[in-house]
Length: 212
Image (tube, rainbow, N blue to C red; front, side):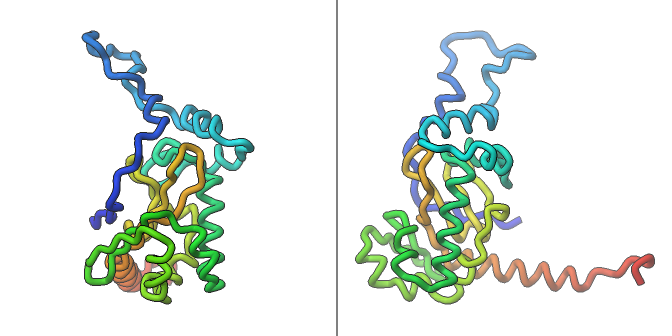
């Protein structure tokens, strides 16, 4: 199984970690039925996220909080509706080819890994602008133009990712809007190869007798 490429940064401690409680102080091991050691429920995470938002989209968040890897609110520190807004903006910007709109959705520093695996940290807008055409080439724009919340995976308080970790979105404050912070072209190529191999395998599957 191919592991997702993790972003090369550590997020600041999010307030949602407090839901797990403080470390036990010289107390007996939890007995059956003791819920103090269990992780926070998604509803608890959503409540914490909403407390940092002026106008939370309660219905949307409750119906879209489940993703591959866990609850979006617990794993990222923000709500599904905030991810949906960011994803839609990135998707539209990529499809239109609007450079200014794309730059608005980028978080800094932006980590860029090229097809050979070379890493480059872009710390300012000018840095991104100088290599924009290389970073946002047609292949990357095509991937961004296909983003969909239903295809996102969340990973252990690091954010949400797509394409085996080729594209990472994270937030810099609880309840905030995520930004694109990692573009891993090497992982993007690997994801494309894996998808092509899967398609070939599917084409080679025998047809059941009842469908011939």
